[in-house]
Image 1 (cartoon, one colour):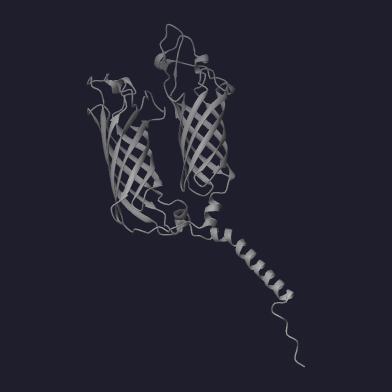
Image 2 (tube, helix red, strand yellow; image 1 turned 60 degrees about the vertical axis):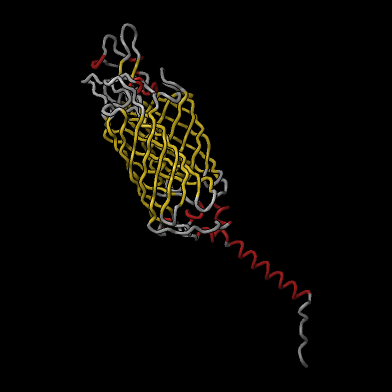
Length: 410
């Protein structure tokens, strides 16, 4: 007798198919995060390399008396012109960074700057890192984006106490250089591109020497770039990868920093205010729990603790001393400690993260200003460890100190 065949439309057959389909769906769904994790990092794939030239005519912002004309030439410093070269790269468009941050570019550059009239500030040469990305893409050729620059400028004609030249803006031959701009970029072809934009720059020694009024410029930029190995971008980023990168979560940064600074103090009548000779040490610690809202932006509170060797010196002045021979009794350690609470926001990109903060000191050394601001650049050397370069101000105008340190991200 032939065995009885099972009807393919029987309830048992249908149940088996449903179970099998469910297992296949669950297996496929469970592989989505794994798929996102297996997309190759941009550091392991060949990037798109390019070289460019940039020209930047600008006006000098009249922020101090020297620039306004109180100088050896009795002339206003009105304008500057810079020209330079840069070398940079874009992540491979098939890589994780290339898919998540389309159009992102970064690199190193240098430029030479002159001022009109000449002979007052010198011709500084800047060496800087830069990074930029489009935030509006009009079509395949035209986009609008931002670009920042962070580095050092060498070769200033610095203030000399032995001469009559009252160069208040710059007192050191080397200063920090910070720049931020908007750029309209147009692709002339696969290899050539043109960029037009506006850019502001700030030059300062971070209060490591005195005087330190700084130099600020605001003007236009005109650039042209050549790409050696153009790579065509992928149309869309995989949904699983995008969702993973945009997942909201908390990150925790701990950063220690140190710097040296100058200090000016007011003495009782009939003594004039005095700039204390030498430099003073600053050591700080910063703890920042940050909420990462998406792949580009994070924000949160920050606890700032700082010891400043020059804090509260006026209270411990040795009466009768002044000028280069001024003396102080060393203040107690607790009198030179400040503790502040700040709100910080970050632009989070591969390699670099820009952080800006507004804070208020709840514990404050006598004579110091409580309201402070900070701007720092984090350069990640690994996924967890970063180098920190930053600058701290009080009341948006009074320089306090640099923030040079190392941080760890949990």
